[in-house]
Image (cartoon, rainbow, N blue to C red):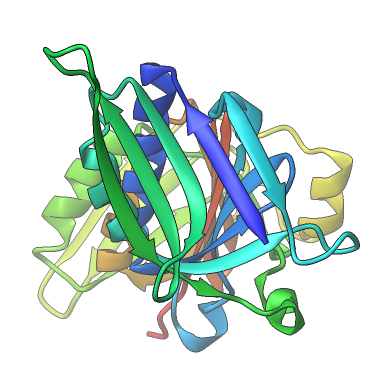
Length: 284
């Protein structure tokens, strides 16, 4: 297996850094999947066990000036690597003023993803900083565990208010309770509520955008759910805050799909990036 990529544009380096920083805030370890035209950061389905899951997809042509790879075989021309996201962040910190960034799959004592950062220098020669990040190569027989999750059979889909507003509210509510209930209906109404034996606090939003229903959505959305009825999900407020705090990619829209009393599915929309994030509910 071989992989090498190069970025020359400083804007693309910054953009890629923001993506990786976002992912590192959401999870510690993830799977990096490399294909000919896309790069994926994946945390496979943990929702059934009470954990979160994530699927982030980048079109390599939007980030890299050069991109070459040979996968496991001609029939399965992909590479799957397990990696600590924070280690990539550390490597990219030195690339904020770089002339170029190269990423290669190398073999040291163990397989590594090697980042070569070319930095400007007062002298005629550039400085080269190298970071070797250990990775684990995931064998072909396990690839099935990292397939994209199917869109859940959601009851309500709604466009979220600005992330900064939600973060400010959630930060205050976490001082009152460990759990947060998010509810919404197809009329564009949404609430964030915490409730304990001593206190109950609710923030309401109205006239939010409701995403248009596509043929795909019709297959996944419950047809029996009344338009004005609220679907709700009670989640660990720390997991919700972790999701909000990690966003550095500035999506122009965040869609929240609510599977009533089961899960929250967030879908971040950006020109270059697609990111999905699942948070399971917590029983009352």
